[in-house]
Length: 461
Ligand SMILES: Cc1cc2nc3c(=O)[nH]c(=O)nc-3n(C[C@H](O)[C@H](O)[C@H](O)COP(=O)(O)OP(=O)(O)OC[C@H]3O[C@@H](n4cnc5c(N)ncnc54)[C@H](O)[C@@H]3O)c2cc1C
Image 1 (cartoon, rainbow, N blue to C red):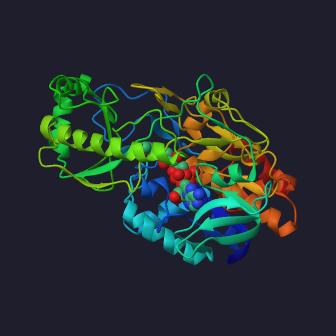
Image 2: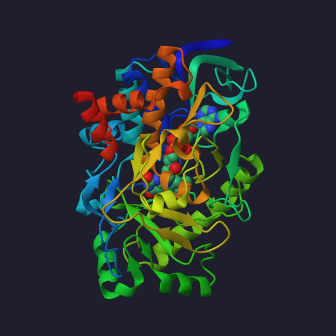
Image 3: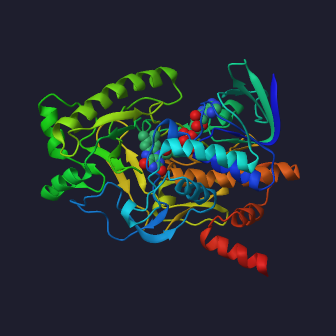
């Protein structure tokens, strides 16, 4: 069955897909967005990934032991570097009472309520004219080497959606891979990817009792993680068998609630159904254990319980679709700038050990941001396709930074704009002038840093 035809087809309704669909519609395209679940938001709703990380430049001083925060404290009063659709979404969430504005109190992250977010997304899409189809899983393309006709498995049987330009926002690069675009997986030395984590919301939390404990044990908490001694004690008592040395949790939009990011399943791959099945079983058992540890060992959690776990285990890393440019860890850590910048990021290289305990965190230079060039969104060997979000072209190290929500939404917005311009002019995305993409992004409120300023100057001459 042929379900729909559009200028731009966006597949995947996570942060990248929302950015792409809203931006393409804003640029004048007729857009269809297709998502496998019955709601939108991607990891932010399906995997309860909270909060959205800071999109501000980093402050010079890293957080110290004893910081009693419930939010990451390494970003500061610096410049916000992601604007456009990401900020429009945040503003709508705040208006709906579903998010706390980024400030020193939130470590410049955005704590939000995933249920309010689901509702706000429907309003935003309906207001923008984007058509959407839910409960439809992209399983392949009609013609190898082309992404203009995509097949979806649905309760109504297989359906096809066709478009002039397609944007793969599946996080896993499902459509790009099906169309034949080359990709890489995992770290260079052994191909292992970051572990999966089942996130869960714990309510009945008493922040005062917890903060009193941290004040008395300042060597036991740093920003959003720690409790090393209690973890060791519970492990020795046989009450905990964690694949990490500490626990990690964040405050949310609600005072008596935390979002716990402490389960860890390694050596599993998010496009392998057997690995996913094993990861769900293992991580749910880990969640039960961590929740009991918090309740029985950690001051502030005596009356707590799990209110909700993710619809699915959170998948950090799968395919990275190779494009015209492959962003590297060095590009991130030197805050490299590109003439064809279409998005910017400030989040550190953040690699949860693919094979055991430990996390590597390496910051972007304080007060600075790196550029993502348009070439990272242009897959090799497939001409009518763009990628956005966590499946764009980069190394394992670079991916660990640009995978976060604000940057994913920013690359989504850029891909949506490029797709709309390509569809309108009958060109392929690769043939669209980058200056035209940048000009439309700036018109949509995106901040492209120095390149954006020179594009403005060129326009006004
Ligand atoms: C455990 C964990 C913790 C994290 N912590 C943070 C954090 O604290 N803050 C932060 O900002 N970021 C965090 N991240 C990163 C962030 O959540 C994601 O990387 C981000 O959501 C990427 O956005 P995306 O749109 O590219 O992909 P996703 O959010 O994965 O969205 C992809 C969408 O595509 C849909 N889809 C997938 N395949 C198909 C298909 N074949 N057909 C149709 N639809 C499909 C999915 O259902 C989903 O809606 C975390 C990630 C994980 C896993």
